[in-house]
Amino acid sequence: MFKFQDFDGKLLALRAEMTAPVARIVTTRMPSAPEPIRLFYVNNVFRYSQSYLKREREFCQAGVELVGCNTPEADGEILALLISSLKQVGLKEARIDLGHASLLKDLLNAAGLDEQQKVSVQGLLACRDSVGLKKFMEQNSFPSNLREAFLQLSSCRRLDEVSSISLNGSKYDKANKQLGSLLELQETLADYEIEDLVFFDFSLTKKIEYYTGIVFEASVPNLGLPLGSGGRYDDFIEKFGKLRLPATGFALEIGKLLQALTAQGFEIPKKTKTNVIVMSKFRNSSVEAVKILRESGVIASLEVTRRSLEKTIEYGKLMGTDYVVSVGSSLKSPVTVFDVKSNVSRNIMFETFLGEVGG
Amino acid sequence: MNKKIRIAIPNKGRLKKPAIEALERAEIEILEEERAYVSKTSDPRFEAIFARANDIPVYVHYGAVDLGITGHDLILERGADVLELLDLEFGKCTLVVAVPDASTINSVGEVPALARVATGFPNITRKYFEKTGKQVEVLEVSGTAELAPKLGLAQIIVDITSTGETLRKNKLRIIGNILESTSRLACNKIAYRTFEKQINELLASMRGESK
Image 1: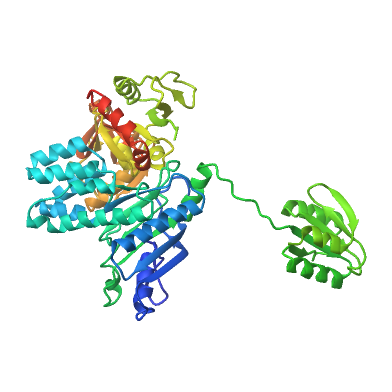
Image 2: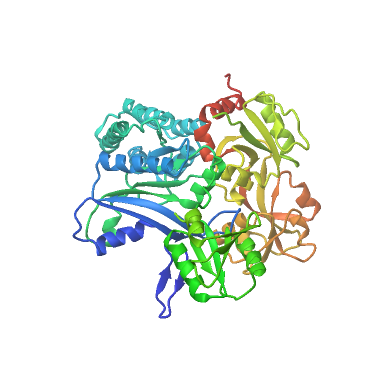
């Protein structure tokens, strides 16, 4: 995080993500808002980036938060919104990979591992090293049912495959409950008809600590980095106030979306508005022409430097202007329209020109 | 999707030959090596790219290639967030802290404050000395860190060694080990999701398991 000191020595920081600011706003500015609260943002955040490609430190994020509810329906809504957002921007083959922040923690606790061993298991899972994982579990005498569950969970890709896993014994109550909640989520996703786009990934854990339930990442095959991520954070908002509010949400990185769209050959639509420069010896008529053009949806600017038509056309070429229009003392008489792209000039009535370019 | 899986192989140095051999054991032969930007392989699912070993972690991280063979030390140095799917066990080396034979420093604990350390691994070196609580000045050199003490550039170097021969030749003595490294098959996290089946098949044949 970027941190620095204010004039009076107080510590200031630039926001590195939006969830914490949203949590603060929910607790301090919206204490009596009816629940659930649905919020969205499109904002810039600041981070030290690992990127070797660009020295960017400012990123634009678009995100949503659904606050005040911890049902599978709430998680389902967020995941469905994520998929439809990606489709809406024009991305193909988008998918979500989803893990569970506390399922892994609870199983590791139930296995009775110390901190060092937990780190080892997480590392092996994160590297998809099933051979190493088997070896580790044998060496550390994992109970056989837990060994089986770990291997099964790490090979599960569909959420409904998780249903085949259950663990006997009361110390596994929490884990079993979470496995059950994943199944319920799968059913919700099926209602949205997106169950084939959401995959289970036992090893998926996020660096951000505040997640308590599902955590997920969105990606497309053409880009090697996730487009965005999110998850459920039921204990986080109360840190900002006394309110305990469960919540879930996601954030997309706008820069990554653009990269992914480019990688998929998507062409950003060209501007459709016409761009016109109006010049005249008679200021009253050029000011009027600019006003009329703007009112009909044209991007019009006034030639303010008092330079010649040639110089203005030269400027127009550099600026990507469509037309330079030279008007006389009145808009009732014909005007000279110079088409900057084709180098053709015509004398036509202002009304006719307006009819051509006006929306 | 009909995309081929791209695998990056070191274009020179000690990792190149064993990397090519490791792929050959998995019945992937590189058909047109030099000059070609992307080389075809005998397996139509894969194509190969030759790149500098220390750039491969970054290529994999960003998904410019899906897979890459490179050193564990280089993956750590570049801070690449990649999957290390397989330890290929060749290119074994140790990243060590070394000083000239004549130095009075006998352990990392004796390294004086603000000592200058020459290394081709500035990130790992910085983290290592931070962890030991030593404030040092890290001088980044590419290759030939072993020359730095002779030239009076630094009293200490951090470099990789496999046999210790280069260090001995340059009259340097090891005072600490930072990490052990071998070559890994690194994989982009998203590529693993996209090509899980094909990559798992590749892993099985590289491990020598029957298909």
